[in-house]
Length: 186
View (cartoon, rainbow, N blue to C red):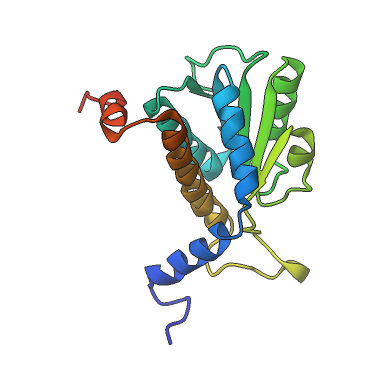
C-alpha cells in the first residue's frame, strides 16, 4: 500500500470525494435558490480560498448571472437584493469577516462556505454551507494527508462546480450558451 509521502493523486481524489459526499444537499439547494433570487452575486475570501471563489464567480458569469469579486477595481457597491458568498476554511479570517459585516450594513444577504459552521464568519451569515474539511482535528492532529487548507480549497472548487451544474439545470443553460460567454481574447 502506498503512503501519503509517495506521489499518488488518487489519495487526494479519495480525500476530496469523502469530504464532498458529506456536504448537505439541502444547504446547497438553499444557496442555489439564494443565488437565483439575488440581483447580483459577490464573492470574497482570502488566499487560496479566494482563488476558488474567483473560479466560482467566473462560472456564474458564464451562466449569465451578474457576479463580482470583492476587491477588484470594477466591482460595484453591494446593496439590498445582492448576495455576498464568503469562502473561508477557518471561518475566522478577519478581512473576510469585515466584508461580511460590511455587506450586512449595506443590506445584502450573506452566505458562508466554510469548514467551521460555528465560526465567527458563519454566525454572521444568513446561510451556511459546511464543507467538513477541517484543517486540524482533536489535539491539533492533521485530518488530511495534504498540507493545511488544501483539502478544503479543493472541495470548495468541486462543491462550487457542482452548484454550477444545479444552476445550469434550473436556468436551462446550455453548454453552447456558456461557451459563448467564455473569454474569446486568446
